[in-house]
Image 1 (tube, one colour):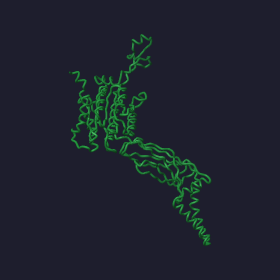
Image 2 (cartoon, helix red, strand yellow):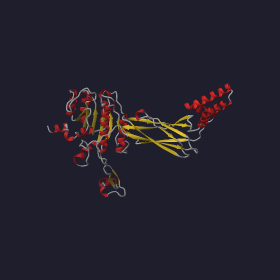
Image 3 (tube, helix red, strand yellow):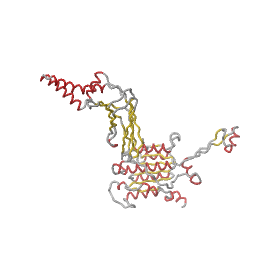
Image 4 (tube, one colour):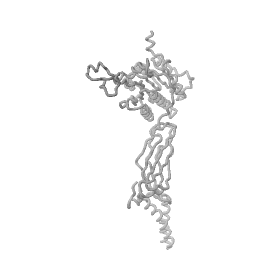
Length: 441
């Protein structure tokens, strides 16, 4: 914050006069005028004193020469919906003179709560003060914090000048992630036997190549046939561990969801996608998020495989923090990314489906190593019908049956259902594959 000089500083100070300062100035000028009309010299002295006090405060405040720097730190930087986060502010006096009274106000969206305000009496030269406040949002999203506004005030409250810093931060509020039970899934790799064969089929060929011998290599890895061919020692590279792949498909179509706010079917679907994606990443799956628009958030294999599961989890949660309803009418744009990724586990979180969309999903099942569908009965979110746990609309039951006949593990979801309990039913032993039925025919 730089000082103001000359007439521009005085004008800024006059504009910053408070109600008290303006009242003193008006009373002083009135007393001066009355002293001439009434020929009272004592009243003139009082008027000059009253007018000089706010003018002096404005001039001194506008001519301050100290500099103030600010910093902001979020803890955590990525908050969970419904949980509090703390914002830490640091004010540094980088000048050689102490500051006067400082009033701080940080700009935050109304969703996070009221604007925090602080009063600092004095900051020593080269010193600093730290303050903090809490924010909380029940709605996921990305919320700007700042810029910080600083107001200078004189001890008598005659004048206030506002300064605004340019720096700001963003708080990301992600959906709540529920802990899911460990169940058997198609495509998982234990590392031996038939599990490993299935995983390699999902993840691709072994990364086995030859390279020149290096000091310290195990001689048992020497490939003698290639050594004889090239005339120098050649060894096998160790096989890289393979991971099963998974994709989480989120249906964001506005026509496929009902309800509004945090209690809508769409918000349940977003929370379900977040929980499933994080659960699969923790189990070692290379997981990515897809939407009906074809948007894809890569898993840990992105960037040459340098991303960890925690990095991929953060990317997916950040994407789900801002995902919104789309105006799409179908799921066709998600098919090409799924085909390009090859075989793997597919978990779809779906809203209302029509006959054509159900048929497309049924055909898509043949391209995946395993398929699980959370099919939302959105009528229960809109309160259109009160149904028993194992019943539903005739059309909804038809969609469930068609997907199951195509080999999907279908989990009907109704308002109020528990995601961990639904996930408990996802078991490959309980979902007979249509290919095994054909083989036994």
